[in-house]
Length: 217
Image (tube, rainbow, N blue to C red; front, side):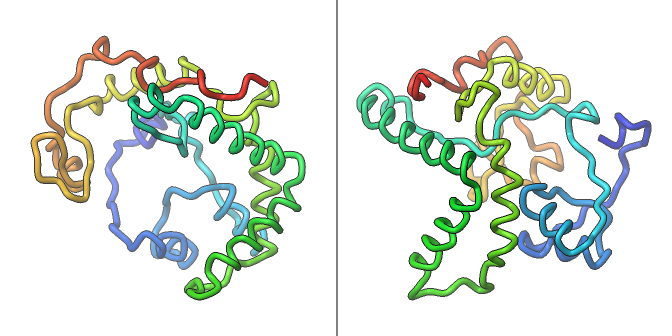
């Protein structure tokens, strides 16, 4: 992103505790970090904190879809009805949340309260923030046709092209238990322990996802 904007791309990376990154930014102990506009962005707005946001796509960085639902191909072939039923129920939940974000937030808070009744969260959820976050994200749940979960091949193709062009489409992946020739630690990746390059033509975007099990409408 820095290089795309004309900079050298030199910066100091701080390895901070995951849950402390946002507070480090607020306290000005760090200059930039990855945040979710639907959570930290909402919190910043509620607290009157002005954020200078940089979106990946505005700086030449392609991205895929996130978060994702992942299953094994064997499950798709052996239990297709179960997968369709699960995705149908999930779609109904997102459709309801998109249409009734505040009600969905109340239901979420109620479910969390029951789930953690015997083991309270370290910090209680801010109910107002949860509601505001739900209202913010509700408009992103469904596509222009009112459907949830549909992925487009071009998004994956663009992401794969970008990974390949930047030397990031390689045989090694990050793992906290890196002990094989297929994985390495995050620090290992940063230090160049990435394995061998994977030719772009070796990976078809169609092998990464399927819309076949989603509700038709």
